[in-house]
Each structure stands twice: as C-alpha cells, then as structure tokens.
Length: 130
Image 1 (cartoon, rainbow, N blue to C red):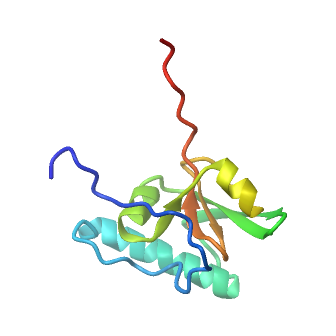
Image 2: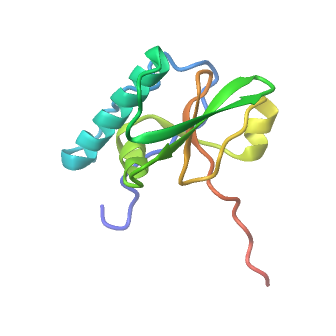
C-alpha cells in the first residue's frame, strides 16, 4: 500500500540461523531487487563457506567477547535495501549487541555474525527538544 513499508526487518535470533544467506519469499522481492539480492546473498554465502572473493562487498573482520563479527560494506548502496527486501536482516542496537558480546557498524553497513545472521544497527533516535 502507498505510504507503507515495503520490507521487513527482524529481531536478532535466539539461536544461530541455519540459512542466513537464503532468499526470502516476498511479494516485493521481484525484478532487479531480487536479482541484486540473489547475487549478493550468493556472494556472501560463498565467502563465509570457503573464503571466496566478494566483489560487491568490503568485508572487515572484528573480534568481540563472543567471537567474530563482520562488517559488510557494500560497494553499491542499493544492495542494502535489496537485502532488507529479499533477505533475512535483523535490526538491533549497540546496547543489545553489547549484552550478547558482539558489536556492529551503523547503517549503511550491514553486519554478520554466525550466531546472529545478517543484522543492521540504525543510528540511535534522538528526541526533539521541547
């Protein structure tokens, strides 16, 4: 519907996702958006399975209390909304990640940890002054 969001973000999973790079069926995941997401998810899957090159991303490994997490910096900024539309992307806060022993870079970067899947950290909302 006009004026409504065309994508969905999720909460962080309670258990590690079995298929973090799987394409999600959606009525909005069509055409070029689907093609872009399919390519990006396959590239990430190959990279994390075998260390294959990632021409669409610059991937930076970080180590936190609970293990490795990865900053996924897309070369093309349209990859982020494509993955949100067609992938399983969680949204979280720095505080929530800290409690779990992880961290993450703010949007437009995506993040990935094997225990959490793909996630994003939006900037903190600030209340307007009265």
